[in-house]
Image 1 (cartoon, one colour):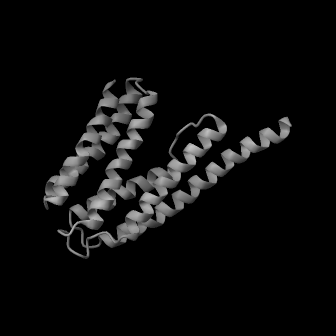
Image 2 (spheres, rainbow, N blue to C red):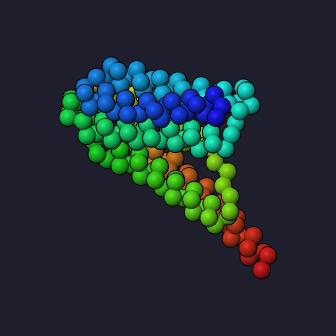
Length: 184
C-alpha cells in the first residue's frame, strides 16, 4: 500500500463524515471535507506519477473513491431537508449522475468479459464532467444562489460524456467483433 493509495483510502474514509455533516446541518464542515477530498484526489494522482507509484489497486481505488464521494453527495443534497428549497438538488440531477456512472460500470464489465481485458482511462469529457459535478456540490455547500445554473450545466455535460463513453465502448466491442470475423 503506497502513499497514493493511502490517500485514496483516506478519501473513502472521509465519506461518512461528509454525510454526517450534511445530515446534522454542518454545511461548513461538509464543505471543508469535500474540499479536502478534492485536493486529495489531485494529490494522489500527482504522487503516483511523481514517485512512479502507479498500481493496479490505485487505478481502481482512485475512481472508486471519487464516485462514492460524488454519489453520496448527490444523494444527500437531494434528500436533505435542512437545505433551502432553491438549493436542494432536484431528483433528476442525482438520477442522471448515478445512471451515467452505473452505465459506465456496466459497460466496462461487459467489455472486460467479452474482450478479456480493459484499460481504464477517463476521457476529456469525463474529466470536465467530474469537475462540474464537484463544482455543483461546492456551489450548494457555499449556498450560491445560482446553483441551479451550475447543476443544469453539469447534467448536460453528464449526458454528453455518458454518450461519449457509450460510443467508445461500442467501438471497442466492434473492434473485437471485426477481429473475430476476420479470423473466421
